Image 1 (cartoon, rainbow, N blue to C red):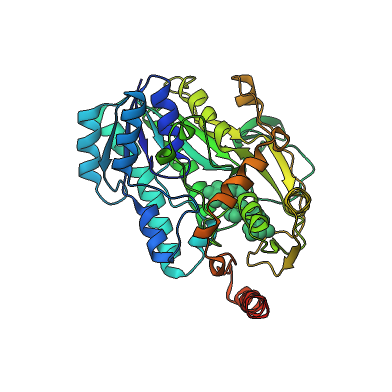
Image 2 (cartoon, rainbow, N blue to C red):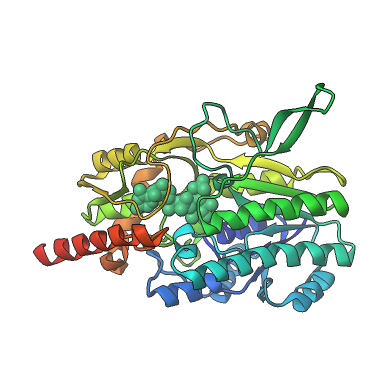
Length: 407
Ligand code: USQ
């Protein structure tokens, strides 16, 4: 297949590009390199040293003799160039990861909210409308999020995208319908992924685009089989308060002796998936496309659920170190249960990697190897969900400063 990966320089995009290239597909990466620019804006860097995209691709060619092409293009801003590129390259499938993916970054300020909405919504819409205009039948595989469902305890398993409901007609008769599961975003970032769902619903119905939306949980890990091929193919690893995600953060915190930053009671239950499974799921979705005219196909891309405090305890046991229960910078349920169906991807052959597979210690080794690159002042999460909460967050920053001066 000819596969275009929009957002192929990012944390999921890069190992996906290598995985698909290795599997024999003809791969192109289209990226505006915004993730690297945001690192510069925030004054942080990936724990792992990353080369330029061109250098990474040169090494990939050198090691495997496989060519991945790169196009520097902002699909949210440069619609005509996007259409032109698609018209020339004519992919059989596109993987759409070209979105701002961090909830805390999206909540930093009004400017960050505006950027996230403009970027994410326009990226999705530009891509779909260009495919329609070109008469392309490319299958669109989009990276969505488990966060579209919200995190309230409902005492029922979350289905894969659609919910069966009984509608009572005017004459009292009940009819069954399947509707998109009610969207319940917990941040401006998650809100954009909810909006994506409506854009997909419309284009699948009106123009019969073939679309798969992957509702992914929190990704952990950093290496995949292909990023291990050469030191310079290493994936990025975010540990900072905006882009670092919870389990990866806990692991590097433990590795450098920083108290594990649990928000609130740590009673939040979330869905998780290892990066190797994430790229495998994208491949499974690509090789099992929906038919033309089918509604958006939705898979829950996760393999297990865990409570945040249980993860902190597990990491503290494994690596050592203490746990700090901090005021939560987010407006989210303090405690929730979560049961999720992932039958779709399991049915396609996914064989889950779970926390028990021993890969946690590999991550600790990565953290220890590169710990000289960590700026521990960038660890606290300072992005507050409301102005009220911002006052509590100040306390966290003061605590961090106090700890630093005392230590
Ligand atoms: N948390 C802590 N301590 C930390 C960091 C986070 O207790 O140091 C808590 C948060 O308050 C939250 C949970 O851990 O309750 C998850 O936070 P996260 O930063 O690991 O993940 P999140 O912001 O939800 O976003 C990440 C990705 C996003 C993806 C999402 C999937 O950045 O792109 O869509 O995971 S999901 O969480 O299922 O919506």
